[in-house]
Image (cartoon, rainbow, N blue to C red):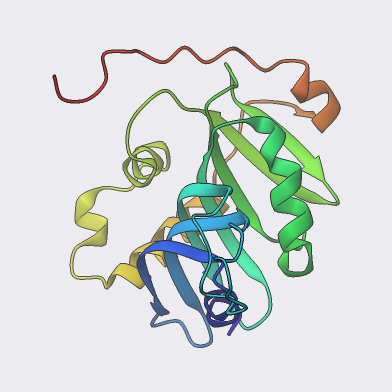
Length: 191
């Protein structure tokens, strides 16, 4: 299975769940998906003995079969990181991959097609990506009741397949000219 392969390569980070769904041959993951690995610790050659990753897709949800990513969702802090994801996981991406990402440095929804894969991008200011996606896709908590964590990702995937962005497709180059400056509130956290 693809997600087990990624797990063995230490590409799944801060894992909330990873396992098989009730759909035959399909596995789900929730956590952070590594884009750029951290350096190996001094004196180690064990792939799992790395420092914190340099770049991840935060709060990701991924659904995959044995060799293809069916659905991917999560948070990019910068739109410029999208090509890094495409390059790293290109062997598992197809035009049928459903990709729905939140991006901090965009001000309006965007739709970008890279290598035949449509990426629906939604601005993000705050909130948990899982909850924001449930709301965006009109999935009620009752729709998930009694499902395993893995099957909840399947439910999200099924709803995401029907998601239609109001944004017209634009090139990545055009999208990169439309990014915004992200202002962080300095008063975040305990006082």
